[in-house]
Image (cartoon, rainbow, N blue to C red; front, top):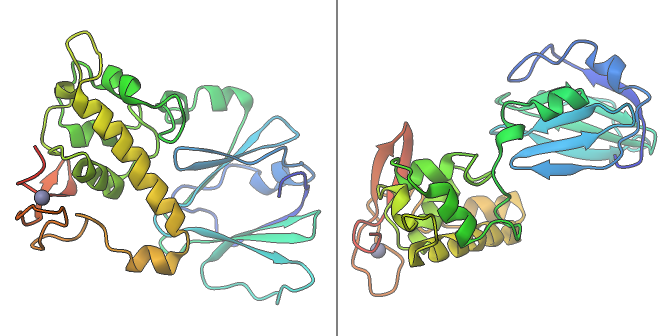
Length: 256
Ligand SMILES: [Zn+2]
């Protein structure tokens, strides 16, 4: 898509999670994709018109790319959007559960976006470290689990990787978020462990790459309630509880 123009936009339904914006196809057609960015779990494509195409995979969305010459012309059952690019690529968005999202934002809407404008640092960036994490958790009376799911603290972390990172860092999900910071907002040892653990679990997940390996890969705690803790020398059994409407998995023995 990068550097290519939209020559055709096919919408096979009026909505995904929400309705497509008005004149979506017309506003895309003829525009060039300046570059492709990612912020948290959002994909952003700034366009030559100044607008930004915003995309989110939701729970089950995926993009596939075919060459126009090779395309069969038959759309799959859940192929909801197809971008025909001047490069000859046909980029298809497939989403069985339809929690995905596409929107087209003006420069003003991008700046004022209720989610994007408040996102915290990217977890794999240099800007995210123990000091940044401690500053964000300072004085927070919520649990560490809730704080890490708050996209203003750190961007793009979801339920699974928060559980995994807390296990790596040996920190309880119920622990009060403020306890990883000193009263002045400096990082305590727990903040160093947690920041490093977040980078580690995300890095490991990205190295797994393919869906097949992702599915078969065993998480450390996620979805393992009742199983033995994988930490060496820990006799704990993974427990499960609901926190802020989300299921949390943790080891009550080694996570303090
Ligand atoms: Zn354990």
